[in-house]
Image (cartoon, rainbow, N blue to C red; front, side, top):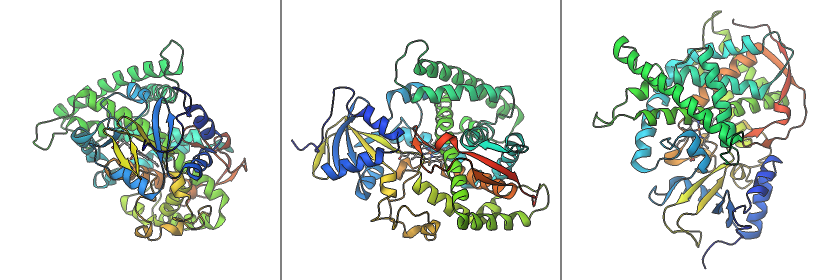
Length: 452
Ligand code: HEM
C-alpha cells in the first residue's frame, strides 16, 4: 500500500507507446513534468513490459547514481543484452562490473589517451578531406557518426581504413538498428537482422582478438596500442585473472555502441550552436585560431593544445546540458527499497531522466539561455545536477575520449570552414538520441587555413 502514486496502464504495453511517441515529438519531458505535477517526484508507470518508478530531482539522481550495488543494479532492455552480449559492462554488477570497467579504464584514462591526440587529429583531417572539402552542402549528423565510428575503429580496435572497417561499419549500423526495435525474432525483422549482424561482428572481433594476441606475443608491440590489445594483455590485481574472449568481444561491441552516436550528437549540436550564437562562435574561433597560429604547417594537435581549449569545452558542456545525448536510463531493484516515503518493490525498474534536471530553473538560472559561463567554475554546479555522463561508479568511462574527439573535431572545423544552417528549425527529436531536423544540413565555405 506504500507503492508510489500513478497507474501501470494496460498490461504489457503500459505507457511504452505513449512514451516513445512523446520522445519522437520531443515532448517526453513535458509529459514527465505533467506526471511530476500530478503525482509528485516519485510515481509509478509501466515501461517496456516492466513495472517502473520514475524519480526526478537532485535527490533522485543521487539515489540512482550512488546507491549500493547490492540494492540497485543496472537494467537494460533484454534486446540490449541479446545483441551486445551478456558479458558487457552495462550488464555486469558488483565485483564483475568493477573488474571489466577497470580493464576498460586502463585504456580510456587520460594518462593513456593523451598519447593519441595526434592520431585523432589525423582521423579528423582525413574525414574532412574525404567528406567536407570540395562540398557546398553537407548533412552533419550522419557524417559525425562516420567520424565517431572511424575514431573507435582506429583507436579502440586498431583497425585501419579498408574493407574490414567497412564490414564492421555495416554490422554496427544493423546492430544499433536492431537494439532499438521491438524484440521479435522472425526473419526480416529489424531485431532479427540486428542479432545476425551482432553474430557476424563478434566473429570478426574474435579474429581480431586472436591476431592481437599473436602480435603481442611475437612482435612485442605495445599493449597500449589500442583498447583490444590492452584488454588482451590485462591481468587482474593478483596478476592472474585475465578477461575471457567473450568479455573482450562483448565489451568492444558495447564501446562501439556507447561511443558512437553519443559523441556524434554532441559535435552535431555544437555545430548548430556555433551557427546560431555569433558571440559564442567568436569566442571559440578566437581560442582555436590562437592555437592554430602557434603551429607550423602539417603539425598535429597535442595534449597540451587540448588543455588550452578551455572555452570550447565550456561550450561543449553547455551543449550537453541543453541537449544531452542520453535521455536517461534504467536501474532495477534487487530488493524492496524505500525511497521518498514509498516502497519500490524488488524487481521493479527505476527510470531517471537527464534533461529535466538540466532545465530546472531552481538549479540552472534561466535554463533556456545558452550560457557557457555557467561552467566557469565547475565546482559551483551542485553535485548530481549536471548528469550528461551519469554519475557514481557507472559514470561514463568514455568521458575523456569523447572530450578529446570533440575538441579535435571542433578545432579542425572552425579553422577550416565557415557554415550556415540550411534549416532554421531549432527543435530536435529523440530517436532515441537527439536528432536535429533533417540531420542538420549546412552550407559550408572553406576558410583560408592557418595550418594544413
Ligand atoms: C558525449 C559523449 C557521451 C555521452 C554523453 C555519454 C553518456 C553516457 C551515460 C549517460 C552513461 C550511463 C551512465 C549510468 O548509467 O549511470 C554512459 C555509460 C557508458 N559509456 Fe558513455 N557517453 C559518451 C561517450 C562515450 C564514449 C566515447 C565511450 C567509449 C569510448 C563510452 C562508453 C560508455 C560505456 C562503456 C558505458 C557503460 C559504463 C558502465 O556501465 O560502467 N561513452 N555514457
